[in-house]
Image 1 (cartoon, rainbow, N blue to C red):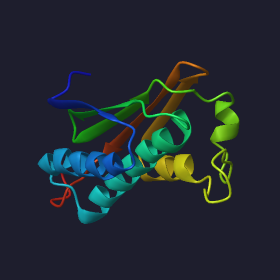
Image 2: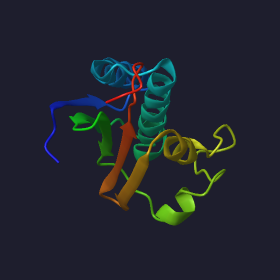
Image 3: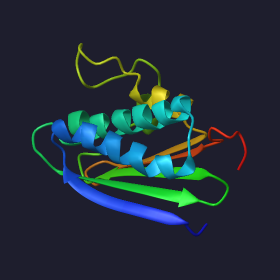
Image 4: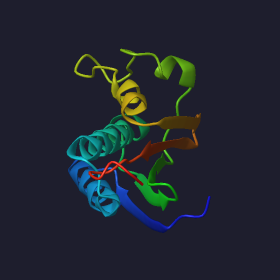
Length: 146
């Protein structure tokens, strides 16, 4: 599907950049005139995806995080978060609610939250190569129509 608009940005996996990614996604989504609830869903999903990269992909170093935002026909927002970190050895296990490798301070709900706030969600990962999360959200907008 050919995008109507697109933004690509790469930034280091510093915790301060999670807020930057969230705000970039919100500003990009604003062109689709989302409701406040839809905007909140987008911001939360991006926050979870980027936080997972910061905490899990690069546990002992700072690495690159790629964020791609695409406006697709039919008021569809596509969000891709990609890293070149350590990868996920067992994707099925990682998708289980409450599962975490991040220690007691982590809830293990990041993937579950992303899945529940988006219309579609995919996660691809190769150990030692990195992870790609792709999410899509149909935005009905404040007018309720496309």
